Image (cartoon, rainbow, N blue to C red; front, side, top):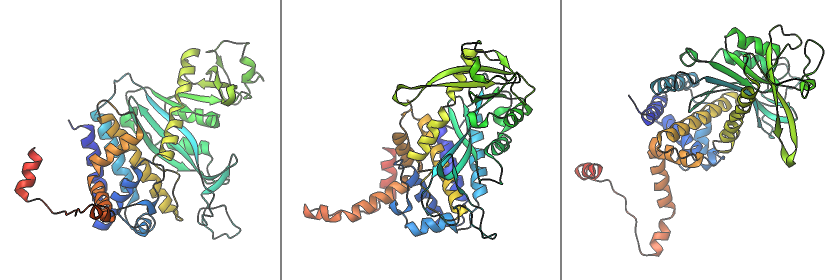
Length: 391
């Protein structure tokens, strides 16, 4: 059975084989090197391996198949999880949430719509007071594995709503992971609609969704009225829904010592205490958003074409996945995204580190000359190289 690192190496090799030329393979290596620096600023002009213009052409103009990259990554994920499966009793948790990649530039090809009917469909919108690219993300958690599986871009009024996009994302959950396991779909209050709950029930899955405190029940009361007048874990009927839901609530700590009463409902009759535990576990997708943005630069795209932005998002998420795999491979796990990314860069992309080292030596050769040294690099003879490898 292959190890985790062998699957990661196989994924990198497969992605490189999808590139039609050696120049594009070098650009892909350079981009992964940028993402795996895990500093949160993987800007093309910061690369030490390729020029910023070549990376821009690679993302925006070069003809390589983005769908093949997605398909290959998903196949390798399924193979890896199947080879290292969690215990059969471990549920598959499907987390869905909306995140905003804030932008303040013009982004003419992605900005707000104009009166020109021929103008392209905008991606950069204003939602909840935030201007940027709004993504509905589906995130899978099974055992120790974390997989950003899919996402959809919310395009504003006149296009599918975030709830409708979430319902479409549910259909992309692979049967290889859901078959034979309990599937728990967790989402925030924005997805606490009858439409979303119905879509989860059609899949015979269990929904654990946050709910607003002013949500009406069939008897005309609001959920907030259950606090201090009912027991956690009882079943209620929401207005517009014919199926019973189990409800519970808890106090969430906010800034400055304040607390906020939160409600959570489930289509499965969990106990009130266990339902609160499940509701709190939804926060792991918030941790994923922070890591993908502030470590792997998910929101740092500067491309002006939709294709370039889409490719940037895909490669950033793959870099996150590779770092996660290497973290699981290391014993014990390093539990540090920067350390895991450095290890992934060393194990999976040694050529990038080598080119960076060569550039560093070339740029700083004058420092060695000040101390009467000369740095000379020459290839080792084949026999000597083999002896070094044996050692």
